[in-house]
Length: 386
Image 1 (cartoon, helix red, strand yellow):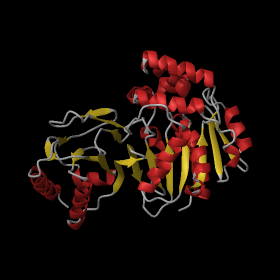
Image 2 (image 1 turned 180 degrees about the horizontal axis):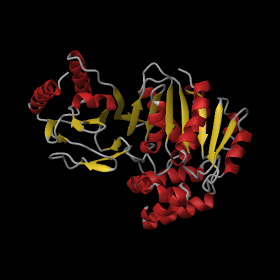
Image 3 (image 1 turned 135 degrees about the vertical axis):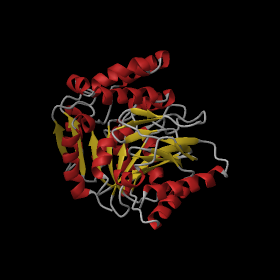
Image 4 (image 1 turned 180 degrees about the vertical axis):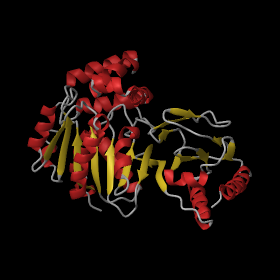
């Protein structure tokens, strides 16, 4: 379909939306890796988008991303073309806003009627879960098994981008921000691992998902242990990455006191040093800077609440009760949750598998994404079920 016809339809749709007195206007404009996409007359609560490796983060309530296959239709839209609305329809190389999620669906339907094939690759929205607004991202074909990814402390959904991109063609990939992290609402501390596990299962309830393959790293792995035992019928298989059954209480008490006194900034560089090898930090400075930004964006309540949950957890009696097929993954050079911690879990969980990723520290899913994905794929292809 000629791009001029697409432009005409979008101009018509934009005029319709303007009559609804929506608050925010954005310009369609080219984007590139790690570049900020700035809106036209944004409201005070909205932030520029940060695009990194084809993904982005924003304060919008809902987002819909289209795959690169859409570019042959919309690629000729010139910078400055305005569509008035919220939230955001995000193309890999253009950003265009749409009014509400159901109106976005109307756009897709109209373009398909006009002879255009557009593939929706990701829906991002906030859902009320256990009384808080939880941010989640869902991508992949609906009939496929669901793989749920739980983030580590001081990170968010973006930490799983290498996996979302890799697995979304054959699985439904559900990522979410743990309470107080990313764009999920924070409540005053303390939190507990059990509370965070109940958050996860309530999210599944809200999404009408009966059973998932759960993949959790660090804090996410601690949540996964509790989730698998507290709600065993909701977890079909389990992947625990760079995690443990217990953490040194004195260490966490000291860190919590330091954060209360000095804030999160002094924790940024020590965290990066634990998460990645020096060689990776040197070779991937932009990516590591994105992780620094993720740490800084974590709410103080959220960081402290989850730190207290990790300090107070006692999963030694929980792990042996895990009956689901379980894979343990750990980076060889992980100093936060070392190989010994993974081996202890391997011993505790009957029938579990253990894989050590060489040349990786605490976040092997990022530092050695290809190796991590290969290990994870072998397990999910066998054990992830609808």
